[in-house]
Length: 309
Image 1 (cartoon, rainbow, N blue to C red):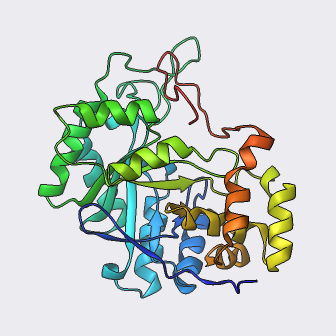
Image 2 (cartoon, rainbow, N blue to C red; image 1 turned 45 degrees about the vertical axis):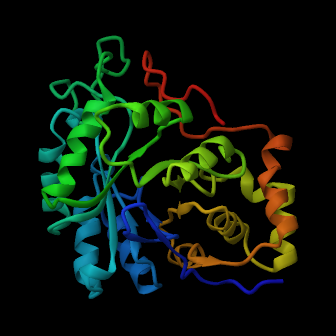
């Protein structure tokens, strides 16, 4: 039995930047929730904060970082460009920096490989009269990444990457002549019901880290009741969340658990060393449960996820 300890694991990205393996996700943390969550996280040892323009909480995250007393240089900050800003990511990152109250971010990602109408009826989720998303169908994702790459030399971000790219779409991006900087990460949904083993192995072969969002599943997650997870947690006398986060780190992924509850934020930062038997058992859970993608917005007619491998 391993003893759960605060995570000290650091990964080195393909550009030499250091990134804490466990970060605090802030999706769906709004208003004062994000502020309090980030303060609690920093107090308990987190040094990696993940936000996005579309989350609407960059100001709260930035204020908490400033009020925490932790030096900016010790904190790894990630934010993301939204689909309505694909034609002008420089303006978008400037706005994010202003809200965060910092001079640069450590990592800037393209949130989804989907461009949305910047002049639509809503700044985040523009829709057509039919109610479907107002999507720029013939958009060139590689061109957006080409523009994002330029932000490194301009000093707005230390690293760049992508998010929600399937094996097929990541392969296409890497093959594009417009791609001069290999993405440092690809942030995707990852957990034992959606392990994406094929995508992970491919990304590793290209020097790209996968970052796991929703690593604990959804709210009231079935993973917390999964027989295999529960048995391994009980055997090690730790929570199911600790098992899930430990598995994510042990397979070489960066993991971004999200919570606004102080005790859970603290507990989510703890990991153990899983035995080879337990690690493999979790790797194979999806063969019993079936593959389950929990975050899958309707971006039609754009096909974002060709496969779940």
